Amino acid sequence: MATTGFAERVAFGRVVDPLRDENQAFAAPRPGTMLAGRFLLAAIFFVSGYAKLTDPAGTIAHMTAAGIPAADVLAYVAGFAEILGAVSLLFGFLTRIGALGLILFMIPTTLVFHNFWAYEGAEQRMQLVNFLKNLGILGGLSLLVACGAGRYSVDSKLRWPNPP
Image (cartoon, rainbow, N blue to C red; front, side, top):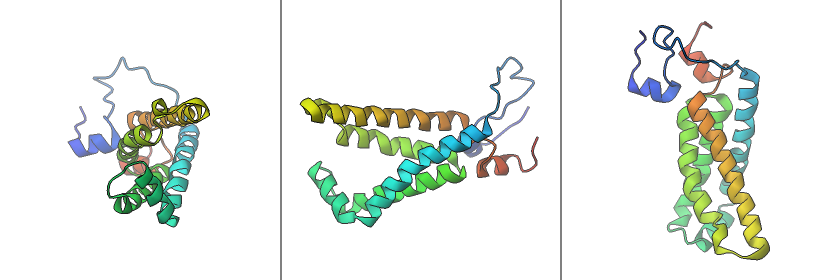
């Protein structure tokens, strides 16, 4: 039976043990689809993080208007968090940890900036659409936490240097 340390299990997931997991149903691998999904998820975070870092004044003003304390510092933290999360997804390096970090970033962001329940009319519909979009992104990130980065990733090369 394979044994792994806690950090390895967090980073790469549980090792499948054919003796213990003989009844487990396996899905057909789709490494190209996993790669495309990672790229598409990374794109939104990279663009958003880049926008925050290239227009800090606008980001700080937006965050201050939303009532965020210490917006002058948190604007840069948010920008770097999104860029680092996007790079993690893009290369598939520590993907589960990167996706989990982006999930933890997105939950308060979604609740604070897309609080559709505080609006009426057209603005409420727009905020609801953005709220639901963020829920969809959270779903994609959750799948990465559950399934990992796939075959075409740094994680895969670190975990299995020689293909099985």
